[in-house]
Length: 150
Image (cartoon, rainbow, N blue to C red; front, top):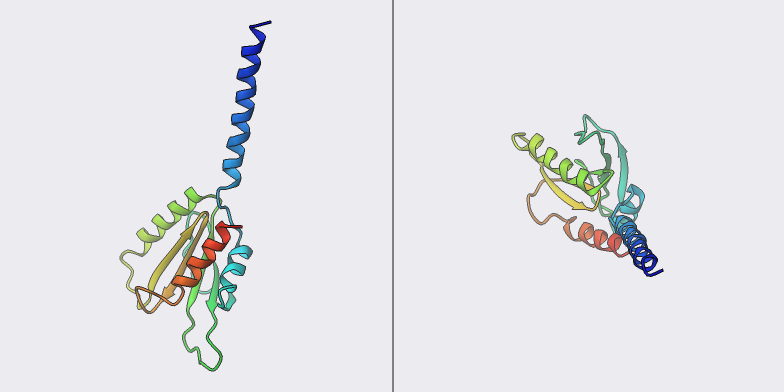
């Protein structure tokens, strides 16, 4: 009888530990495009689906969803600003995708600067005329915080 109790205790510990590891997977910050778009638009930005333009950079077999950023009413938009949304299967894939992006663009000559925003399985690339402190920094950072807390 005393041999059964330690075996039962070990079995119960394994079951409990197995259940805890499942909770870790659930909290991995795996987001879908619609949730990311909604969170960013809640920051008073208008995103307009643009479809596929030109030859978007494919990263680890993921083709981005391209959106343009709407302009405030009354301003003309001759040259729209684009955001590319890469939704990967995992955070690890997103990290590898960002590394691949940097390798593929490090020697590219462009008049625009690529600003990368990353969270969980999401990589957002914003093409801007300025290198630092773009107008999307705060809204995207706030949107990611909002997503993490839901």
